[in-house]
Length: 126
Image (cartoon, rainbow, N blue to C red; front, side):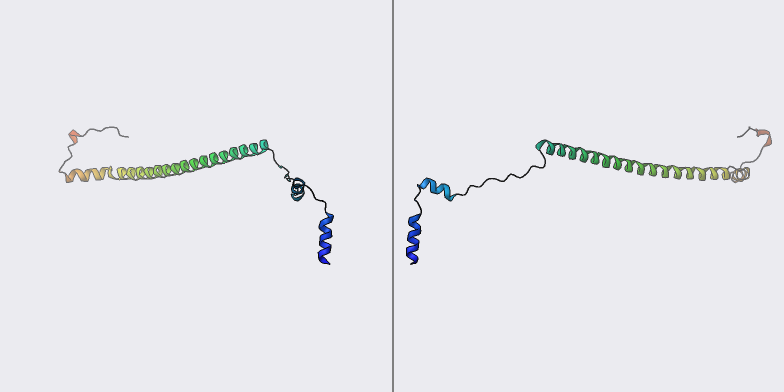
């Protein structure tokens, strides 16, 4: 009975030429287009904008680095200046200590010099 049913089913189908059978077998697939969110011009503008923003960021970072380097050099120079000023004040104190009349008189005696008042000339000092 199954054989008869199958035979009747096969006989009922009209025979199509081979060309038409191939067309029926292949389902037609239409390409689904994805919606474009951005056009090519917009993508280009985004790219240009990103490049400009990146270049500005890099230039700002570079400038900040230079400023930091210069400020460190300025601080070093200021430290050197204060050190030299401190040395100058120390040297001025030493000069004032060593230029007293008593010390000069003691050094003269050590070297064997004597005071001859006829040869003394008074010079107005500072």
